[in-house]
Length: 64
Image 1 (cartoon, one colour):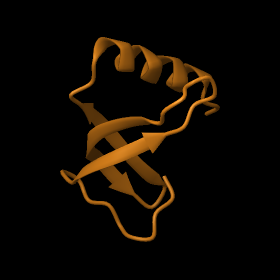
Image 2 (cartoon, rainbow, N blue to C red):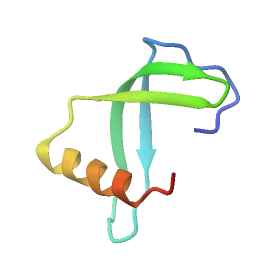
Image 3 (spheres, rainbow, N blue to C red):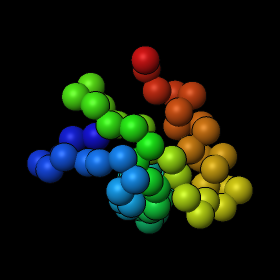
Image 4 (cartoon, rainbow, N blue to C red):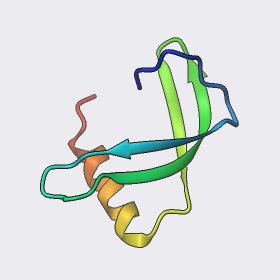
């Protein structure tokens, strides 16, 4: 995640994704689970089953 400010463990954030084939952006609330110079890990909150499925598909498509 690119940001101009540091993110801290426990901090709540709102992420917005624009996905091909979706008219509206997808917004996901989460909490920072870990943070380091190499990046952050976010634990998603209050996701619907549909949104959880979309997140799973996106993660599967990511290059590691």
